[in-house]
Image 1 (cartoon, rainbow over the protein chains, first blue to last red):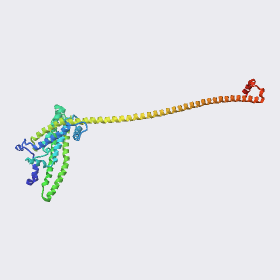
Image 2: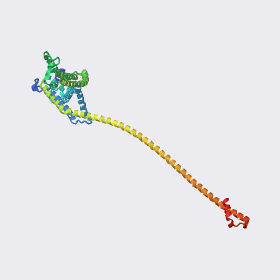
Image 3: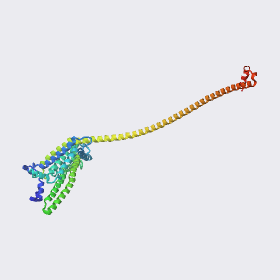
Image 4: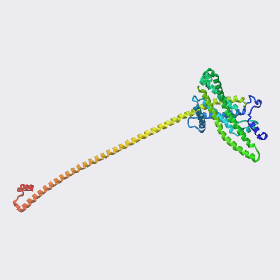
Amino acid sequence: MASESGGLTEYIQHHLTHLTPHASKGGFWAVHIDSITVSLVLGVLFCLWFWLKARKATAGVPGRGQAFVEIILEFVDGQVKDVFHGDRRVLGPLALTVFLWVFLMNAMDLLPVDLLPWITEKFGIGHFRAVPTADINMTFAMSLTVFVLIIFYSFKAKGASGYMHELFTAPFGKHPALWIPNFLLNLVELASKPVSLAMRLFGNMYAGELVFMLIAGLFSAGAGVAGWALYGAGIIGYTVWGIFHILIISIQAFIFMVLTIVYISMAHDHH
Amino acid sequence: MDFNATLIGEMISFAILIWFCVHFIWPHINKAIEERQVKIAEGLNAAERAHAELKSADVKVAGEIKQARLQASEIIDKAQQQANQIIEKARGEAVSEINRLKATAQDDIASMAQRARDQLREQVGALAVQGASKIVQREIDASTHKALLDQLAAEI
């Protein structure tokens, strides 16, 4: 473990470093290969799984696999239906993608914090962060995509002139003197959506990962009897935090999905 | 907070995932669910209809049983009446037969009695003639007095 050479701080710093191509360390092209790999693997897994079930889906008695997939889909569809009263053919799948992808990426947090880095180390890769949603690039990528969809549906539902009219006249009123304040407020409101969406998920996952690392630090914190006592405390702490984290990852995935639905449904509303 | 090209890559992958879900996952599963909903609704309707039909059939069966019972009792009544009639008729026939037999028997008896009486009368006549001839011997000539004797026999 890293603690022998530099203690807990170095251990955590080591674990908080993304895997990047060496040549471009620090720059714009310092792509986080670990985040991209894990998120793509999970995304493909999710798509493959649901696609296989969707291909064989029958209206007759469903098998266990199909029933499970349908339960998830109906749960998501119900959430969309509650908020959005239009055509759900895009918003439904969008919400499903958000929910499952975020959930699966969050769930990587439940793997032992050292497991994936330990495996990659065998292949000569020093840094590997397993939780893509604890990477701010990941959460902003999703929230900005949602943001693009918000803008797209705002234009689609209201037309360019209608949307511009709304940006300048709501919420205060139509008076020309109020156009600028209206517009500024709308800009802040618009910008706050992707930022809050991304920061909430990132903050929760980053903090969760950090707590796992701190607890994992207990495993190698001392020697002798005290060391074993800390080791035991580490096991208990890791278990308790892990169980609690099941709740957190589900709730965060759910919140991300619901807010996506709400924001896009709001884009359809006329003021 | 180190933003870099990861962001753009992830945005593209997210968009692809959404596209895939919109086109290849959601419609198929949703269609299956909706079709099944229709099927279940139809099944429930059919069950309700069958239930109603069963009820009406029960009512019909009860009515038919009632009618059959009524008919059966009517048949029994009629049969009893017929039986009574037959017995009545047989009794009448028997009585008339008895009467007829009684009448012929009485006739026979009467004719037999008449015959016996006639015989008796003749015999008495003969006896009387015999007795008288025994008493008077020759004086009485059977042939001459025959008419007289016959008259006497008829009077007895």
